[in-house]
Length: 143
Image 1 (cartoon, rainbow, N blue to C red):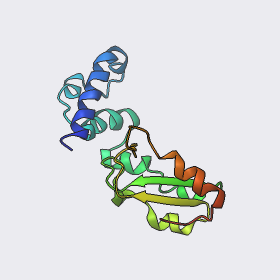
Image 2: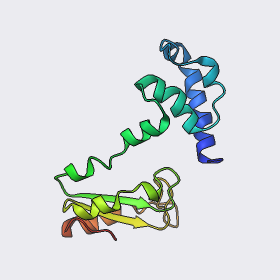
Image 3: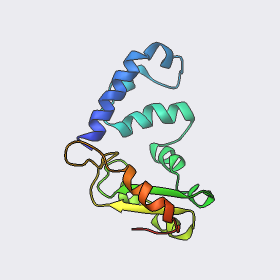
């Protein structure tokens, strides 16, 4: 929280300042509150909830999750997840739903962070599993 969430909170304040004239047209957003934001969840509480009518940031996060849509997938889909992801935390991954659908295969790695999976030399390996697994797709697998 003190690294990513704080950095994102600062970034959101900067974006707010760049677009304050347009954002301030939404009277449910308070300029003084936007300038006191320190963390991303505070931004979500003050901006996202005010904009979209959510009572709390938790309600916003629950509505934004793809877990409820997972069982409706009807095309072969591969999910790649890093258990050390600070944003899409492992506790929120719908492992049981993935096991129930023949349309989804899941690969969870112990490392990778958020959108990373870097190789030595700076490349990223995340596209390789897709080209290896998808031709042999048998859904519901969690590796």
